Length: 135
Image (cartoon, one colour):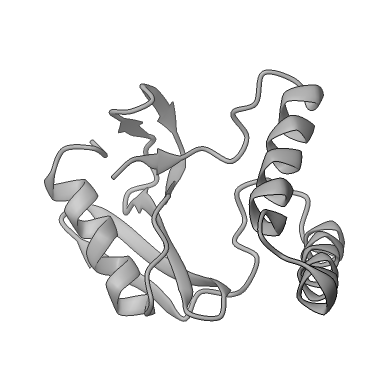
């Protein structure tokens, strides 16, 4: 598992290119009303993000499982979509964390794998900590 850094884009153009690639992926086999529903869901997501906080690493929705302590880290799970949960990892003492891949030092990190439940997202975050991906 790797950790996603939401603000690590080389440029605005690179961010737009990744958004475009994600949209093409979501629409790859969709036709008719299914395609329209996907486009509507993407538009709704963009509106939700645009109306939310400006900080790039804030979760889209309030964490369902907040403040889970593991070693000297705090894990917060949040729901991205139906049956799609992720978790943020930060130090309990407020110090920065080191991320193994891609190598960086951050205030917090977000897991990149979707889980079906908040509990599973927290488990994935614990595995990242225990596996040395977050130090």
